[in-house]
Each structure stands twice: as structure tokens, then as C-alpha cells.
Image (tube, rainbow, N blue to C red; front, side, top):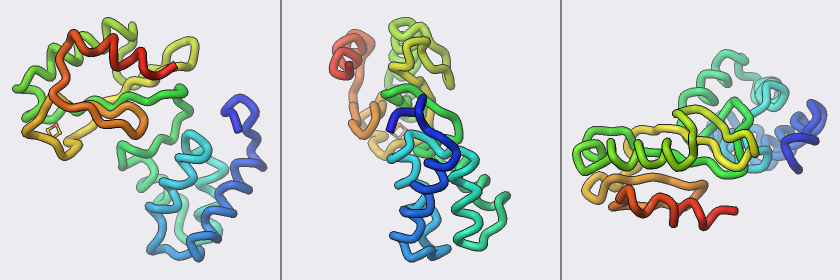
Length: 159
Ligand code: FES
């Protein structure tokens, strides 16, 4: 399913199927949101509304969870999402230079999506490899000890 063809009804159907697969349990909220985000590419309002109804959890709480975690997105994004760790340990290991190289190579700033819809560039807090920074995540792939001269090669892996 591509983002361009996603309808409100399809978003609700996907959210319903995934929520029911998780037993419509409130305890499963984050796994449900993660699975819906993975399948649809982001969390459309209609999907959040459907999850709210099925879990009997107020929409405000669903939206809070959906907008809190950096691995979830309430906005459509590109085919590939780059999450760059902006926490202090990565920053002092050369993160600032890597971040500059990323922005220059992609011609994007944090939170932007490229006009061809190939990339979305985001920042995130610690990704758990603090001793091996700078660290970035491209989709589900983690890159550590990244240097500015590696950026073009990393990006080339993702058509
Ligand atoms: S500070 Fe960057 S991975 Fe922990």
C-alpha cells in the first residue's frame, strides 16, 4: 500500500486488523502503534481514531503516545527515514560534523522530506550505542562510528 493511495477507510481497516490481532488490549498500545506505523508508513488520524475506539482509550492519550516516540510518526514521510542521534555522547564524538554532512548531502533540515519522497530526515535521542557514536538509523538499519565521508555511501544503499 503506498501512501498516495491510502484512504481513510483503508487506514481504519489496517488499524482494526492489527488492534484485534493484539487482542484489543490497552497493554498492547505501543506494539499496536508500532505495527500500524510499520504497515502504513505513519499513523494517520483515522487509524488513531480506530485504535482509540477499539481500545476504549481517549483519543488524546492515543495521540500523546503516537507523538511521543521517535520511532512513530503522525506525519507521512519518505520511503526511507533517517533518525540521527542528537544526544550529547554522539555530539562530542563528531555528531555535529556528521549531521552537517547529512543535511548537505540530502539538502534537508530536521523534519523535512525530500521532494521526490525518498528521504525524511529526523533527529532522535539516544539509540543505545553511545560509546560508538555518532549513530544514525536508516529505516531499521543502525550505523555507528559514522564519519562525514561515509554519508554518501550509506545513502547509496537505499534506492
Ligand atoms: S548518545 Fe547517541 S546512541 Fe546514545
